[in-house]
Length: 151
Picture 1 (tube, helix red, strand yellow):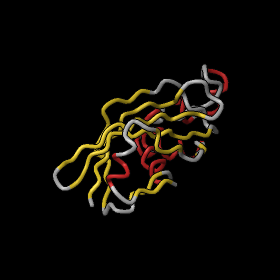
Picture 2: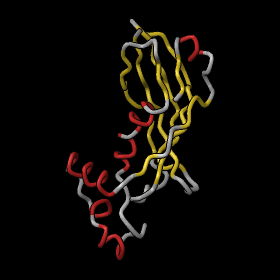
Picture 3: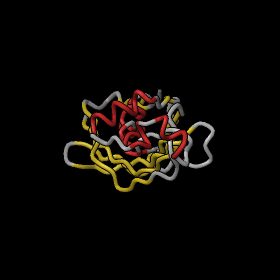
Protein backbone atom coordinates (compact mmCIF):
# COMPACT_ATOMS: atom_id res chain seq x y z
CA UNK A 1 0.00 0.00 0.00
CA UNK A 2 1.39 3.37 -1.03
CA UNK A 3 0.30 6.26 1.18
CA UNK A 4 0.26 9.94 0.29
CA UNK A 5 0.02 12.60 2.98
CA UNK A 6 -0.31 15.51 0.57
CA UNK A 7 -1.20 16.48 -2.95
CA UNK A 8 2.34 17.88 -3.33
CA UNK A 9 3.69 14.33 -2.86
CA UNK A 10 1.49 13.16 -5.71
CA UNK A 11 2.43 16.06 -8.00
CA UNK A 12 6.09 15.06 -7.64
CA UNK A 13 5.26 11.65 -9.15
CA UNK A 14 3.52 12.76 -12.35
CA UNK A 15 4.74 10.61 -15.23
CA UNK A 16 5.85 7.76 -12.96
CA UNK A 17 4.43 4.36 -12.08
CA UNK A 18 3.10 4.91 -8.58
CA UNK A 19 1.85 1.47 -7.59
CA UNK A 20 1.52 -2.15 -8.62
CA UNK A 21 -1.54 -3.77 -7.07
CA UNK A 22 -1.79 -7.22 -5.54
CA UNK A 23 -3.00 -10.11 -7.67
CA UNK A 24 -6.77 -10.77 -7.57
CA UNK A 25 -8.37 -13.99 -8.81
CA UNK A 26 -11.28 -13.74 -11.23
CA UNK A 27 -13.55 -16.62 -10.26
CA UNK A 28 -16.59 -18.05 -12.01
CA UNK A 29 -18.69 -16.92 -9.05
CA UNK A 30 -17.51 -13.32 -9.56
CA UNK A 31 -18.31 -13.56 -13.30
CA UNK A 32 -21.76 -15.04 -12.61
CA UNK A 33 -22.59 -12.34 -10.05
CA UNK A 34 -21.52 -9.66 -12.53
CA UNK A 35 -23.67 -11.29 -15.22
CA UNK A 36 -26.64 -11.20 -12.84
CA UNK A 37 -25.99 -7.56 -11.90
CA UNK A 38 -25.75 -6.42 -15.54
CA UNK A 39 -28.09 -8.90 -17.24
CA UNK A 40 -25.20 -9.89 -19.53
CA UNK A 41 -25.45 -13.68 -19.57
CA UNK A 42 -23.62 -14.29 -22.84
CA UNK A 43 -22.52 -17.92 -22.88
CA UNK A 44 -18.80 -17.10 -23.26
CA UNK A 45 -18.97 -15.82 -19.68
CA UNK A 46 -21.44 -18.09 -17.87
CA UNK A 47 -21.56 -21.51 -19.60
CA UNK A 48 -18.34 -23.42 -18.81
CA UNK A 49 -19.55 -26.62 -20.51
CA UNK A 50 -20.38 -24.90 -23.80
CA UNK A 51 -17.12 -22.96 -23.61
CA UNK A 52 -15.14 -26.20 -23.47
CA UNK A 53 -16.39 -27.18 -26.92
CA UNK A 54 -17.31 -23.93 -28.69
CA UNK A 55 -15.20 -21.10 -27.29
CA UNK A 56 -11.89 -20.19 -28.91
CA UNK A 57 -10.68 -19.52 -25.34
CA UNK A 58 -11.27 -23.11 -24.12
CA UNK A 59 -13.29 -21.92 -21.13
CA UNK A 60 -15.32 -19.00 -19.89
CA UNK A 61 -13.85 -15.50 -19.84
CA UNK A 62 -14.66 -12.48 -17.70
CA UNK A 63 -16.67 -9.61 -19.09
CA UNK A 64 -14.46 -6.73 -20.15
CA UNK A 65 -16.65 -4.45 -18.06
CA UNK A 66 -16.13 -6.72 -15.05
CA UNK A 67 -12.39 -6.17 -15.37
CA UNK A 68 -13.03 -2.43 -15.70
CA UNK A 69 -15.32 -2.42 -12.66
CA UNK A 70 -12.54 -3.94 -10.57
CA UNK A 71 -10.31 -0.88 -11.03
CA UNK A 72 -11.81 0.88 -8.01
CA UNK A 73 -10.98 -1.97 -5.65
CA UNK A 74 -7.53 -2.44 -7.19
CA UNK A 75 -6.81 1.25 -6.54
CA UNK A 76 -8.24 1.03 -3.03
CA UNK A 77 -5.86 -1.78 -2.14
CA UNK A 78 -2.81 -0.04 -3.62
CA UNK A 79 -3.09 3.69 -2.87
CA UNK A 80 -4.26 5.68 0.13
CA UNK A 81 -4.50 9.47 0.17
CA UNK A 82 -4.47 10.17 3.91
CA UNK A 83 -5.11 13.91 3.55
CA UNK A 84 -8.18 13.50 1.33
CA UNK A 85 -11.64 13.42 2.87
CA UNK A 86 -13.20 12.10 -0.32
CA UNK A 87 -11.96 10.55 -3.57
CA UNK A 88 -14.46 9.85 -6.36
CA UNK A 89 -14.32 8.15 -9.73
CA UNK A 90 -14.86 10.92 -12.29
CA UNK A 91 -14.78 8.78 -15.43
CA UNK A 92 -12.63 7.40 -18.17
CA UNK A 93 -11.05 8.91 -21.26
CA UNK A 94 -10.09 5.70 -23.06
CA UNK A 95 -10.63 2.01 -22.44
CA UNK A 96 -9.47 -1.02 -24.40
CA UNK A 97 -9.54 -4.77 -23.70
CA UNK A 98 -6.59 -6.15 -25.71
CA UNK A 99 -6.78 -9.70 -24.30
CA UNK A 100 -9.33 -11.90 -22.53
CA UNK A 101 -9.36 -12.81 -18.83
CA UNK A 102 -10.00 -16.56 -18.55
CA UNK A 103 -11.95 -17.53 -15.45
CA UNK A 104 -9.50 -18.62 -12.77
CA UNK A 105 -6.89 -16.07 -13.88
CA UNK A 106 -5.28 -13.59 -11.57
CA UNK A 107 -5.04 -9.94 -12.55
CA UNK A 108 -3.24 -6.88 -11.20
CA UNK A 109 -2.90 -3.26 -12.24
CA UNK A 110 0.03 -0.94 -12.89
CA UNK A 111 -0.93 2.59 -11.90
CA UNK A 112 0.89 5.53 -13.45
CA UNK A 113 -0.04 9.07 -12.47
CA UNK A 114 -0.28 11.05 -15.72
CA UNK A 115 -1.56 14.43 -14.61
CA UNK A 116 -2.72 16.43 -11.58
CA UNK A 117 -4.97 19.42 -12.25
CA UNK A 118 -6.48 21.84 -9.77
CA UNK A 119 -10.28 21.98 -9.81
CA UNK A 120 -12.68 23.95 -7.66
CA UNK A 121 -12.37 22.55 -4.15
CA UNK A 122 -9.81 19.88 -4.97
CA UNK A 123 -7.75 18.21 -7.66
CA UNK A 124 -8.33 15.91 -10.62
CA UNK A 125 -5.93 13.02 -11.09
CA UNK A 126 -5.47 11.31 -14.45
CA UNK A 127 -4.15 7.76 -14.24
CA UNK A 128 -2.84 5.40 -16.85
CA UNK A 129 -3.97 1.94 -15.79
CA UNK A 130 -2.62 -1.25 -17.32
CA UNK A 131 -4.27 -4.44 -16.07
CA UNK A 132 -2.23 -7.55 -16.69
CA UNK A 133 -3.05 -11.23 -16.36
CA UNK A 134 -0.61 -13.48 -14.60
CA UNK A 135 1.27 -15.37 -17.30
CA UNK A 136 -0.31 -13.31 -20.09
CA UNK A 137 1.70 -11.67 -22.85
CA UNK A 138 -0.70 -8.74 -23.45
CA UNK A 139 -2.61 -6.43 -21.10
CA UNK A 140 -6.24 -7.37 -20.49
CA UNK A 141 -7.35 -3.78 -19.96
CA UNK A 142 -5.74 -0.43 -20.70
CA UNK A 143 -7.53 2.68 -19.47
CA UNK A 144 -7.16 6.36 -18.70
CA UNK A 145 -9.02 6.85 -15.44
CA UNK A 146 -9.97 10.14 -13.81
CA UNK A 147 -10.38 10.65 -10.09
CA UNK A 148 -11.29 13.71 -8.12
CA UNK A 149 -9.92 14.17 -4.63
CA UNK A 150 -11.06 16.63 -2.04
CA UNK A 151 -9.23 17.72 1.14
